Length: 213
Figure (cartoon, rainbow, N blue to C red):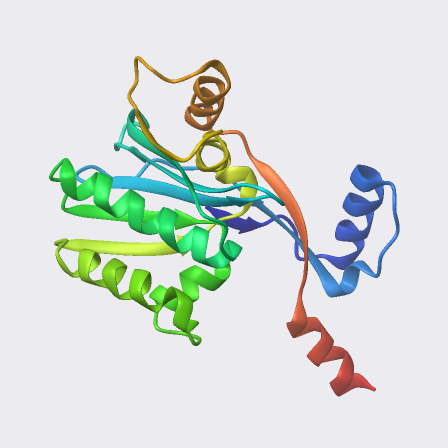
């Protein structure tokens, strides 16, 4: 869920200065709010993520129902790869979890705008990721309905925790009774619906400035 806080540049300047302690030309920026939201009845939501450090790579995914309840999650450690490849593997992993449990209507959320664009038919998929991409699209074709959307990291914390969970090669499934403390806390936080704020550049206002020059 995204919404603009205020369209008045003066108010935006005050907001940014007060909350962030810095001054920026606020007439070129906008403040947005967002939060994690459960899917509508009859749907499930799958959040996924990839994780990459200098010596470890992984991906994770989880499924939640329309009441926000955690259904299942999976964490995997895999050979080193690009972060976009790992993010794509996380999406594929989440779709597999849904299919295995006979969920037919799935909303996918990823904090990788690149992977989101690939699946929406935008951008060129690198050849190293092509096989996983095609497998992912085949899995999506087997669903009744699906959508994918980009989310910011603050609304994807459980996926991030799963992606970084494994400390040795392999994968592990997690269920409501087997989640660890930090993941349980993140799931509870999402259900509570906290709102997050980001300050984003608004390119449309650059165009207005150029017209006024």
